[in-house]
Amino acid sequence: MPANYIREFVDGTVDPKVRGFLHLPETPNGDGLVMSHGAGSSAVAPLLVALSETFSANGFTMLRCDLPYRQSRSFGPPGPGDAARDRAGLKNALAALRKMASGHLFLGGHSYGGRQSSMLCAEEPEIVSGLLLLSYPLHPPRRPEQQRTQHLPDLRTPTLFVQGTRDPFGSIAEMERTLKMIPAKTKLLVVEGAGHDLGFKGKVNREELRQRVLSEFIHFLGVSS
Image (cartoon, rainbow, N blue to C red; front, top):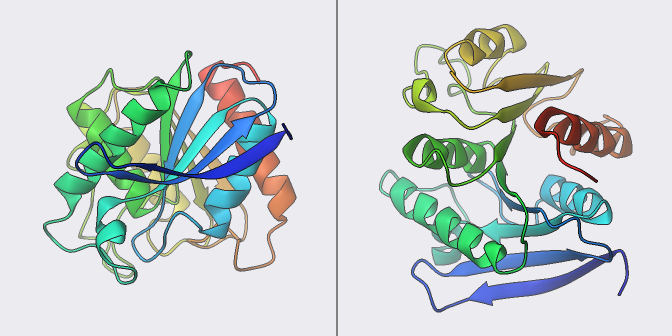
């Protein structure tokens, strides 16, 4: 088996069903990570693919999944009533991954996917051992008064945030203030010059970025690669 064997994955025995792509490492470290996408994207987002490949090559069993709203429609953002079902989909994805990973389970996501992941952990603090939040959507662009932080004082899961210095959804200064609201252990990894896509549509060194995220994640959460 190659170091990063990938196959499509579907579990239709649960509702919402789990649909995505499974990355199986040649030498598993026992840990698993579920990754989800942003509001206008899907499980094939270049950022998710790159990070899943890198983490899998270092022993993590990875499941990057389409959230339930994306399974229902192939384009467009989630609707106002989708969030609870999307969190239920993440919970089902974790249950599916648990059958393949005997060690720690982690949860992560880009933008909307990351926000729903953090909300699930605020609701169920013991569901995973740690969070990886990429470009957390602190507020809509140019609307800093519309903070998406109501659940964060209840977040007790260790969380690594990765944020670009040009992200219109939340500046570094805003993120630093926000982290003070969270009772859990947190860390902010700053990506210079990156926007909301963390440079995966721009000129940021992608290889360097994915290795930085992996290294910080392993160090921050104390897991083995």
